[in-house]
Image (cartoon, helix red, strand yellow):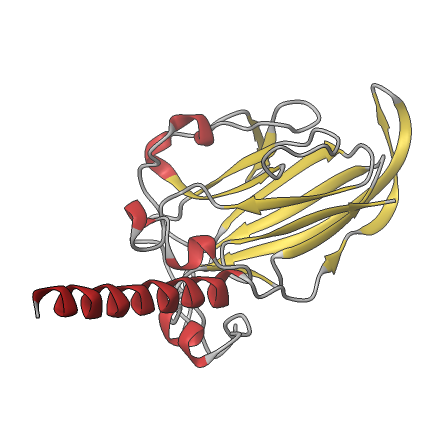
Length: 234
């Protein structure tokens, strides 16, 4: 009898594990429609003049009547990620190869202490800085991080090297907000970097703003929320 009970327990546990893996796959597997950088002219770089492209990303603490949440892949995903922060309008990003790219961020969320101060510094931009509310900086206080935008390669990638990490400063907890609950004077950040050859990369937020797994679960691993793909196209 004891052996039978153990067997049944193992089967039940196995089903639970499979269900959990399925739920995680449902969360992380959704790929929203890509936003494509638009050419705005040319820019001089250490390697000569290159085409210059721009795109805009907003970071919200939660959805509202004015800003709908990302499209959920399933009712389970919608329930698990309800009220969580997300990048808008998409987490699938497409930029051209061998070009200068500027990303403009508008950051509406609060924040706090980041676990690893490395991610409170700017990495991978053309001059090692970002523009924050009109001022150039190379880092922010680790205790005042709202989110990060961190692009990196897949493990054991054979693609051209690409790494970009931008700390997005937090808004104060007592910041004046509008009727949707968003700061009326959010943080504005811009970064400019140079792309190389074509390749497909991933990006995510390195600030612990989710749940489970030391706050790196939920939206942190969900494409459409705080993680996505970064495609450099020829």
